[in-house]
Length: 343
Image 1 (cartoon, rainbow, N blue to C red):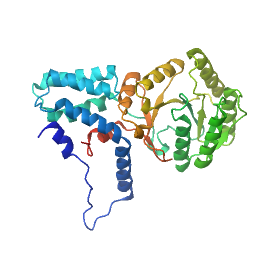
Image 2 (image 1 turned 90 degrees about the vertical axis):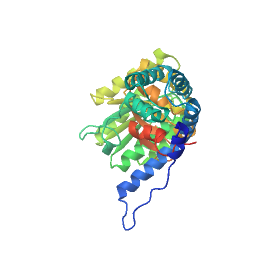
Image 3 (image 1 turned 180 degrees about the horizontal axis):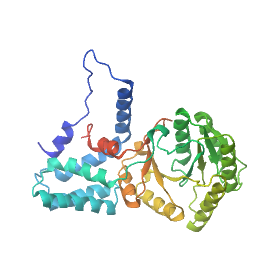
Image 4 (image 1 turned 45 degrees about the vertical axis):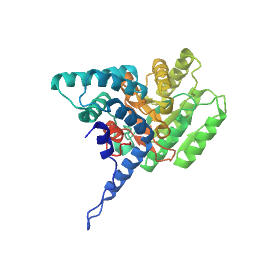
């Protein structure tokens, strides 16, 4: 059986439940989440698998030519050059050690190596991935360019947290666009969160300060601070974000507890440049990668996680309010390489 046949044989089949047995609610939720993740990554999976199938067609062993073709597949799948080189070097080492590896084994080897390269998401699942503690609001500052899905991600995150019983405050510190404030207000209402806002053109740091003061006074559990998504220049961006951080620390000494960069996965290699700009401007501690359901460029998740050594916290796999997911590297790789592989 060839490599391409292996893919076809792994097509998703309905899982039957034995007669007389019923699935637990947890098992049902898990199955639904797996189906939605598979569907959200379908375009990336289609592109990746079709390229891999062509790369190994008619080959029986993993030789230098196969590795050259695999390198091209990964680069053109937006994994990135540096990460691709790491993956190829690791596979070369395994081929040298094991002497003989056939192309049917390449899928599982590739899956293992990619999973090892990616950082594991941190934080408790109970608090939707955030290290929320009682007695002090957990402050998350959200950064990213306009159009990356920053406001939507804040809204979806707020919804998940309020659903988990947390009191959430949102600070509309992107004061340069009236539309951003209005959009955030809609999301806050949908999520059941409290939003603090000022007039358009107000000092973003002032909004962040007022938000934290109100959150502390009202015993909020989580504070989400939106910021302007302008890459006007690195110095201006750095100064603005630094000022916001400084005023927040005057209210909550350890704030912000996290700085999350939101990236649009559909932009492919442009997302690498955005990550570079923002990591130079401020200390980014986590990533959210959005819009993966509408693109074949999902390989960017692998490259950015590896290259910047920043854990991916969330991925967006659809427009629904519940389609922001806690990122799990094993689930992600399984969705790309496991059952349901596309012809």
